[in-house]
Amino acid sequence: HMISIIVGTRPEIIKMSPIIRECQRRNIDFSLLHTGQHYSYEMDRIFFEELNLPVPDHHLDVGSGSHADQTGAIMSGIGRVYEEERPDVVLVQGDTNTVLAGSLVAAKMRVPLGHVEAGLRSYDRTMPEEVNRVVSDHVGDWLFAPTEKARENLLKEGIDESKILVTGNTIVDAVYQNLEIAKKRGDALKTFEVRPKEYFLVTAHRQENVDNPEKLQHIISALTTIHKQYTIPIIFPVHPRTRKMIDQFQIPVNGIFLTDPIGFFSFLQLESKARLVLTDSGGVQEECCILGVPCVTLRENTERPETVDVRANTIVGTEPERILAGVQKMIGGSGGWSNPYGDGTAGEKIVNIITKRAK
Ligand code: UD1
Ligand code: UDP
Image 1: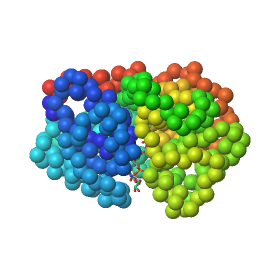
Image 2: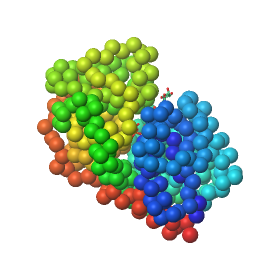
Image 3: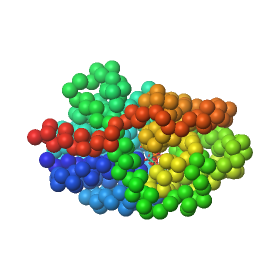
């Protein structure tokens, strides 16, 4: 039962890690394929080191490029590997170009495809990720939906019920498995010289936000205003795409502590003790909800509506007044909601299903 596990970017490495660990624990025959979509040390290798993941069996080294070039390069790379390797099952996670390419190759080579984190929908096709996840769900054979809502989204699109399996999201496994380890490896709050509940944490990297000079400017100036109003530190580990755009648009940054992207261990600690998090990341919305930390989402919509339903998250877009109002609304709240993404056994459930069905 050779399972080919595909990863390419930061969130895929983190969210596949519980599945990889489960395969190792049960001695299941798998191989790991890294497309190289992310390649900077702090977007890639650091997670292999922290999460103790095996060296990939195949590394495509595709790097950055236009959507077409990147997706095409990943497809031909995976195609060549599978000509030789002929896996019995392919697993992809999430909604990146790595997922799109891996899904298409598996479907065309008639290898059963499992999509982890299936059924998420923002219903916004201007997001490249929405296109990717729709395609992957429609060519996939096993759709591992994190929630009941994700299952319903798939049913509405006419996808056969028998393909859909609600398992929870593997991010819960990853958070539970790593938060305690993280604390033992060093105190990130000390490193950043902040005290619990006395700082805000920020991330932003969505193409539709940061590649747009006006929106990026709005986000940065809203953060400056928030710093003035609340007089507490704002820590912003900057994604390389965002760093590039801040430089290119020559946006002045005041009152915000910008730093390179940080490892999962440091990020988890900072997240769990933040007064509030502002983000446009998918995974960060989920993690805040799991950790009981209020979240303000710098987007016009979300494919994680469960977080809003339990009142862990509010959707505010990028207009400074709306961002400020969102912060004001969420700042009082702290936890108390229940986590809609499962009990931390999604990895186990997914591996169980694959080993049973692949027979
Ligand atoms: C990708 C995913 C996005 C996901 C994000 C996770 C797609 C379409 N987008 O976006 O869904 O949320 O990863 O972080 O698949 N760069 C580096 N070093 C790296 C990687 C990127 O410097 O290791 C820079 C390059 O300038 C590159 C830019 O970041 O052009 C964007 O990288 P890319 O992988 O194309 O998209 P992300 O914005 O990272
Ligand atoms: N993350 C991290 N270091 C950082 C920022 C984020 O380890 O500096 C982790 C975070 O804990 C989450 C994941 O990266 O698990 C989210 O990835 P990202 O925001 O890049 O992608 P998305 O979830 O939006 O696809």
